[in-house]
Length: 360
Image (cartoon, rainbow, N blue to C red; front, side, top):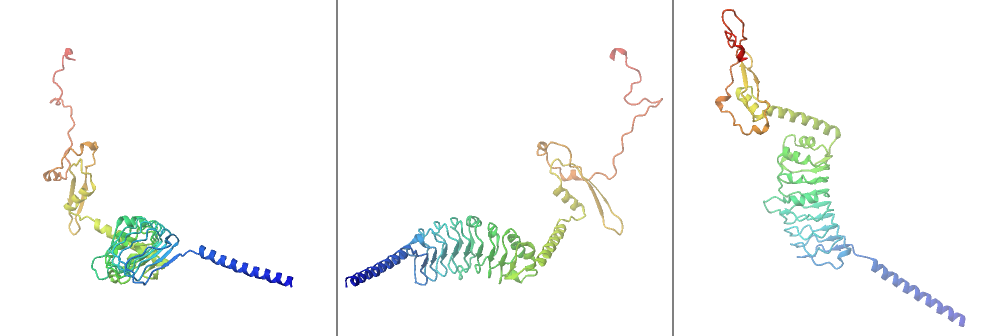
């Protein structure tokens, strides 16, 4: 009997110890389990409450509320994803301490200026489409903010913001995906010149913009932005991209030649000298015009403004008057006659009688 009592006693001790060990493991697991996601969406919030465990939160969801101001986020040092879409936020602020933030969602708010993002050195995605839908002013971009986030931003969505130009994108040197649908983009040439500086851009979407209806819209964008791989969700073939790039280059060179062509008239020659010759010292230019019947007039201009004179004397001289710019006669002046020795008439400069020796 005593042995049986001992066995039952030991069994009870083992079971109790196991229960205690399980409780300790559960408590340890609860202690080590840190909340990384903060779910505060769709709760009719008018302001952002202070979080309880701010040091461990990586994902914060505040979308679908009535929040009008970004606040109480200074302690979320480890936050990487912030969702603030579908609120009533009017200004970007209170994000200075979120140094690890990578993705920021601000869709469908009332923001007018993209600003105060200088402290987000690791920001990779910015979604700021549909701002102030009922307004008339376009979305503006602070140059300091664009310059600071240009070193890390890879994805940008600015759809439905009434944007009319793309000059603000030049600092975004690492941008890979640009979504700018339903804006007021019209000038294809200017937009292509702005986007050609983005060497990392591979995907661009400009659907439902006025410029998409213009002639040769896609050809111009593809030719200028040789780094693009996808335009308006359509992949670009390498052969077509190479052909359009060379074709656009030839067209632009011809246009440049036509713009710089000078008319073959006296006024055209004067404009040529005004553009290509140094302002000082200016000498008279010789121009001869010869016209032949049944042929175009030909002009030959000989300029002699390139004379050797120190540059410091140039600015002391004044421009010649219009009367002084009259071209000299076409025939060159006669050469001076050489002195000849004649028996009857003495040559000028030679005395009739030799000088006495005392004067030598």
